[in-house]
Image (cartoon, rainbow, N blue to C red; front, side, top):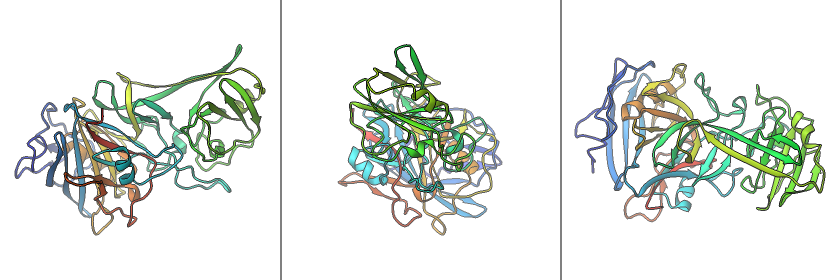
Length: 418
């Protein structure tokens, strides 16, 4: 099928002379605006089928100076009251799983991989946690916050962006690109300590982080390694950990631990000045901990995944890379927040020449996106789809590793979930 809101017979998505032209989805019309990035050749949608009312899956191709780049496109019309997005994720934050397995486990009809994550380590004796760089909100539950930007894995960010940027959906059912902040404190009597982290693999220098049962079993030592300016800086030698059970301090120690955290327990980890602040707490002290993720925009987000902004108000951001072509994934949204575009390129050459980040922004804009983020790419790039009549979703893009890579999270499209 070729739904009229996605493709018209014979229509090419044009990106010529720095100007893109496309019949935009219903409710998402806007005037074409010159882009600031290097343009690419015409992008042709080569196939499209309806997975469910409001959800389509198809493929496209764009010719680049390096050869043809082949990609896969999922669209979700959030105006359909049974179509929604949510975070695909393993059982815990510090864990990885392949996209098809997460898609099937959570009952999504389709999904793509999500944020960059802690996949490798240069710190001796410290294992990668597998957790994502940016925030995570799943079904309204705030799972984690963002690591310092210098501790992020992945290509460079556009000026003015950070690990706190997300792609998400608000309680009004509209998708958007937004920025999250963390507020919170640890209070014992008149003593208050500001929180600088939530279930994240790296804390700001001098900060205190909160770890909950959502973190998983991975060691918390990695959270005290690196710095605000370099991911590879040494692990701090000045750390402290406090365990709180049902509001009472039950254990303290100099070194962050590992292992599952019970549902009634919270663990605080501090480094440098944060370690000094936690050292004031003693076993038996009564402690309250409060944390909240807030978005720059409104309304409140019920789903969020970290992503690097590449498109804003229909214009590619300044400073996007124009040289390095790679297998990439991305998420974009129409001006009205109701149509979402999830893109995953095919595996490496000869299957696909890949795209630069600037070219990726142009493609998302041509598809109808007003705002978009770059997601993890390379061997992580995966699109999983369950077509009508199929019992399970399977990967469709021949991942460049040869098999699906286990990833930290993803974006799932759901039908009739709520």
